[in-house]
Length: 200
Length: 126
Image (cartoon, rainbow over all chains, first blue to last red; front, side, top):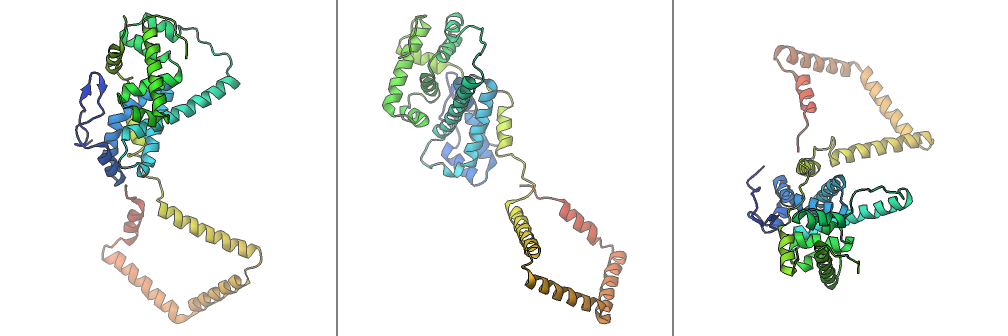
């Protein structure tokens, strides 16, 4: 594509959000000036993380894919509204999370009105958490969390200990984010050790 | 296995991201930066829209019977055109012009119609 597309360093297996090459803000400015490769680089940097957030929130491959596409499309159309000092990752995650919330709300409405009997004979996330290997157990345990905690943990996974950015994405006070994170971790520990969990 | 806070953090940060569908990136790029240009630009749509609105307005004026001025003007223009086309001098100049154009086309190798059709057939890519 271009020299802008360089392989990013990784921390463990999670792609780092600090990158080799131009800063995200510079890429946004270039994209606004009509450079298609600049936006393509941003897509390359964040498509996986955006898809991950969508998939963890929605648990549906097709919906996650649609949301990822929709999020980048919205971001592309409103690049001019991006504040120069802001972080692109926070912005794109916020767009993604709001798109996920819209779909979850629609799904809830639809399922309560028209799909009252939803056959799910497979093991629940909690049972899966006990049965699988460590990474799969951790994933299953995250899936077993209530939605509000799952979102915080997923963003903590993606953005690290940047509570302010997590709070911006979720549109919650920082104190609430910290509380949710604390409870989410507590529930995760209990799930991973096989104990019963009660939502608090 | 028991997890303390640090162990849980390590496990979380070591957790691989979900593998997206293979064509996700391509579909995002196709929907954004590499999206095919629309058949008409905004300017073209504006011009066509304006012309259509004017035509619609004129038709409306004529149909509603309130376009007396318009009808008189159109009749005056039609009359002037008719007078010009029945004037021998005008017809002679038109014949001379047509003959010159034909002569240039046949004897100089110029292909004005072919060039024009090529020019209009090609759309600039954005």
